Image 1 (cartoon, one colour):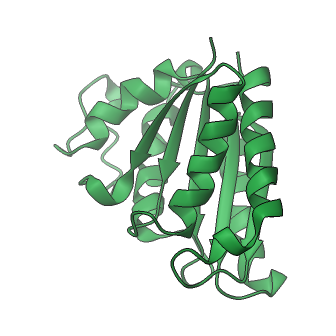
Image 2 (cartoon, helix red, strand yellow):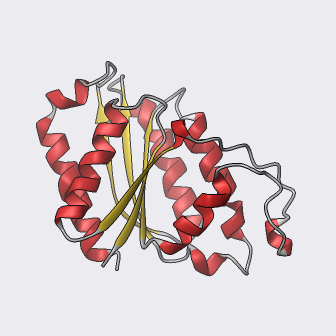
Length: 187
């Protein structure tokens, strides 16, 4: 059974990002995957300070909720990264989470992330590609650097108010299909 970690990088529980990631998770579960949803707004994840303790076989110097996420990331076959666009980038919550992936950048830990599949879900209030393009490029570069495989990206512009995404059932159906594909190809 494919195991997927779905990460919501929005602080707004029940918001557009949460609904989009939940729809991806629903598609994956229907396709037979086991999905765990993690809402970063409910956790305390500190910034990486580049001490590289993890590269030297020592525990991370940050005593926060990311310590429990490292083994979950390693144990899952795929990860869904969900974020709204804040100032032409992912939220600070998701950026801190990704920054801590330095843990997987050393030779000893790289096999725990290499080859995992990833899906990206992005929502934003604006409708201009120039607003969401930097976020897509951030994920493309980050996933390639980590040697992860992209299973797809869904971008839903024009959804600013909580629940606006519900006015776009075709995009929610696309998210559902993305989840089903991720479940079928991640194992």
